[in-house]
Image 1 (cartoon, helix red, strand yellow):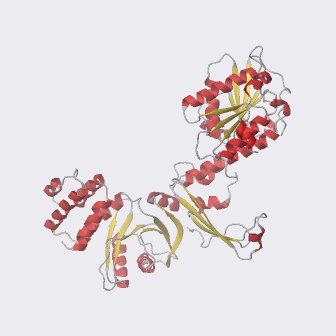
Image 2 (cartoon, helix red, strand yellow):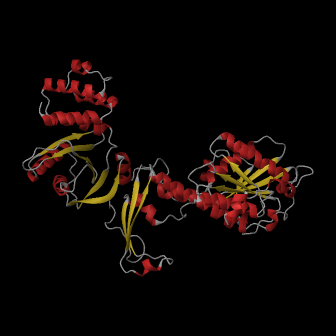
Length: 183
Length: 344
């Protein structure tokens, strides 16, 4: 069980690796398939995990992870708590441009407001972008895959003149002003 | 035709959907071809009912014959109402009554000697199952055909499936069954559900079970051409969970159960709430799982990690013991159901 470090390994040529962390496996597999099937001129490898820390036996074969995507399902409380424990196992260097959140089920009316507020606060405090996706249509999944891929390219250093940190300072999530007053 | 017969017929016609009614009337064989053809099934149901009533009056149909329609419908579409499973125990070895005629005569004689006014109809189907329809009456009342009890028994097995039985008639039915099957008594297996074939499969363990295997290669063949770019970090763990789920719940189509009820009579043990922990008497509660296909849902819970991986005996007893009503008491540790599971 090792702490995931962003710069502990050497990068590979023209390759980007993304780690999808999700407590449920359906959306994770579908998103991984969509990401891999997008047309791009870069090798994209997707690794799937249920939670961090990652098992130590894969340590040697694991490449350098360029982006960690934490998938949150607003419909389940377990998803949020499992993501929070996983975050503690992530090296702090990752938060400088290599972590992002993907949230599903935001349109669902039965989701309690507190959960959404908690997710926003979490993303804002970590200065990470928050992407909302529609998980039930193929279009929604393709859009999500596209967006994750764009962020991945920047985080992996494959886009000239842009780094993860500079991108995130543009797209990171902020709390809407009315939410601030609720504390 | 008397009022009771009219009411029974109206009830039957109302309950059965028109398409199925057409099939069932075709198989009934009490109406002639010409009469059947004269019925217009595209009419509204009340008109159809009146036509049918007049036809039955022409043929002088009795209530008992009308009940045959309902029985035909139920045997064709058995998944209505709730079925409860019972088992014969203490069967002496040499008597295994597998002759339908013998069983039928014994049962009718026994039940009629126990209660005066009953109306019994028995039928044997091709899959070796005996269907019994019983309309109960009392000393001064005629049998009530509006609330019949259905009993299904497979002759070679000790299991009986009952639907629509009230507590008043339970001991009578069981005594008659016990005498006809020549066994000691009839015992409640604590299994119930809507789908008769599912209950049958679960009781007789006819669905496919997976046994633990030492080589994991065959599991990888299941994944259709995994993408080389996608890799699962926890692959060993996921495979283990899937294997465990298959072992406990079986691999193929699972029998369709709707609920599992756990009645708790244990003491409250959580550390948070001090008021409840102090009490000496047990904390009575009932936990009920319900789903359109309970075993599939539980299997998914285990294979996806929502339930812990060595499956708790509380969940695995549903398939291992073939029951879905458990009473959990505090003595010692673990699960002590109030009646032991079925023995072979």
